[in-house]
Image 1: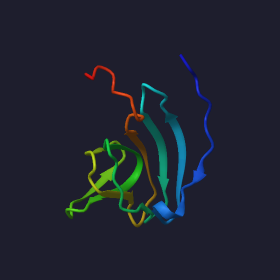
Image 2: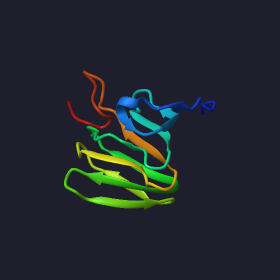
Image 3: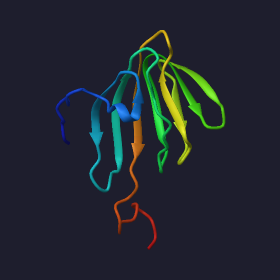
Length: 123
């Protein structure tokens, strides 16, 4: 077992977001794990820029009300307790509604390191 201390919260890089967004890293897996988890806090109206994840992304809303949109024009309103699964390579954005803060856990897997295979896979 490993107990990790709380990591500092930092303002998210402006090139990836519109508005003020803050990230608290929770977990960055080491092989064989490729899991990355962060608590992301959006100020009212703040959101990510368009992006995609090679292995997909799961968002679990912990507080507030937000929106998640896709290039296909679908936009869903999310509230605390909702979970959104964005499939691999789906271009999307997510953030807070205009009049409220929103926080979510962002969970994703990174691609395997070059020359490695996922556990249980065949050569």
